[in-house]
Structure formats: C-alpha cells, structure tokens
Image (cartoon, rainbow, N blue to C red):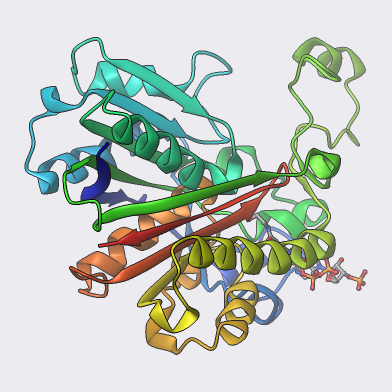
Length: 336
Ligand code: UT7
C-alpha cells in the first residue's frame, strides 16, 4: 500500500480580463453588486476565435505541472480530466490531452462533477496510486464558461460569476505513508440536481433538434440555471461537514490546518467557512477576486498560486474542499 503525493502543479488562464464594469456594458449589473455579493472584481474570458478551449487550456496547465514534477510525459500512466464544459459532447477532453501531449496510449478518464470535479478526480488518482495500479497520474480541471453564458440581463444572476481557466496536478506514488494525500471524502445529493443545472443539450429532455424546431427566443434551457440562495445555504453546511469529516478521520483539529483552499464559489462562502473554523486570513487562500468561479479549475488554479507564493510548504496540512452542482461535494486532507 502506497500513499499519493502532488509533485507538480500548473495553471493557465486566458489573457483577456473582463471587469465588472465591462459586464455592466452588456447587462444591467454593477461593480458594486458583484463585489458585494460575490467578492469578484474581474474574471478571464477567452477571446472568441482564439485557440483556447477547455482541452487546450488543460494541456497548457498540464505541461507546466509535468515540467515542475520533473518527470517525462511518458512517465504519465493515466489521465483524469474534470470539466463541465467539454469541447465536444463526446468524447471528453481526456483523450484530447493524451493526443496533444503525445503520451503513449494510457487510459484517459473524464469526470463530470462540476465544482467538485477536481476533488473527485484527485480522489480517483489517489486511490489508483494507493492500490499500486498507477505511479504517475495527471489530473486536470479546466473550464471554458464564457462561450455558453447568457450575456444579457436575463442571465446576470449566473453569468457574472463564472470565468475561464485551467489547473493541473501530477499525482505520484509516495512511499512514506505519513505524507501526501491522507484521505478524500466524496458526497452527493441528487434530489437537488436541478437547482444548479444546464438542461440542454441532453438526451433526457432537450436535444439540439428540439431547440432548433422550437426556435423559441425565450428558451433558457441551454443556459446554466442556478437557484443561488438555495445553493449558497447548502454550500456553507456541506463545506463545513466535509472539512470536519476529513479532519476527524485523520484525528486532526481545526488548529492543525495550515492552509484551506476552498473551491472558489463565492468569497462570502469562503469567509463564512473561515469564521466557522476560526482560521486567519493567512490560512485560507482565495483568488475568486481575479478569476471568478472556474468550477473544476478553481481548486487547482488556487493551489498552484498558493504553492507559487510559498504558502503551501513541506509538512503543511492542506485542506481542499468543494461543493457544487449535483449536488456534489468533497474534501481532501493533504500532508504536503
Ligand atoms: O460554484 C457552485 C456553487 N455556487 C455557489 O455556491 C453560488 C451560491 N450563490 C451565490 O453565490 C449567490 O446566491 C449569488 C451571488 C448567485 C446571488 O446573490 P444573492 O444575494 O443570492 O442574490 P439573489 O439571486 O437573491 O438576487 C437578489 C437581487 C434580485 O433582484 P430583486 O428580485 O431583489 O429585485 C436579482 O434580480 O439581485 C438581482 N440580481 C442582480 N443585480 C445586479 C441578480 N443578479 C444580479 C446582477 N447584478 N448580476
């Protein structure tokens, strides 16, 4: 039985910055409203027609992570790609990464767990490594939201929140069982699936031909829907529960947390959790101000930046936690 350890991290965000004031030119919103409710100041949206896609951004982040891991691309045994915004309906972007990085014919798995996607993907990587099946697993979270958002006042409750970007981690075998990913914890509650949802195109309710045939200008089924307040209320409860679950399993206390990296859903959610666990500003890493909510990419982008800034160090106890559409939620407890 081995442990697994993150040995390389990388991120990529598109250059194009969209400020809250830029959004207020597209829809009825304001910098004040967005900052007050979410903490977001700006986000990155790809320039339409650029080469950036969910897969290519993931590849760029992965290249940095592999280089920092100090391994060769051919040492990667398995690829896991988490996203809610794949380039194509099928196949998922995992195979695009295998091809773009010219990695030999290793397995590629796509994870569909939205904001919890990276934590779910990390858990899969961890357990494949713990059983000895693989030695080096490439885990990517990448999202291109901007192409699929309703950029009119109708969509403002959702559109102002989301941003584009990618993060990646190389997870590798660790012989010392006191180091690396100590445990991961995953949950779901499907009764709330439609509280944060993108209905179409889907084989269940509305496929593309239904949308074309109806030609209904009021059709919102192909834009994301979020019951914001309901999601918020569930998020604060589930974040707290799943962090506690992870701490208790490892006989740790909240005082043992060196750095909490929450999924960047809303700064107010992160601040609520910070207060609840009695953590200082130095013990919680947030970058939603600059990137918005990048769903499956948010934790690996934040973890990469925290590591780059020297805020994630050898021996630190790092807690990752996420909540989102599904509902799904999860945490990872890591001894760095
Ligand atoms: O990452 C996945 C998990 N997602 C989350 O955790 C998100 C959780 N939820 C939230 O972060 C918050 O619910 C939001 C930021 C999405 C919304 O904040 P809120 O305080 O819950 O606002 P609300 O939806 O209740 O809307 C309040 C008012 C409404 O106007 P009325 O009905 O009071 O006149 C909205 O129409 O604010 C209006 N509104 C806006 N106004 C200006 C909604 N969006 C906007 C906007 N700009 N962008």
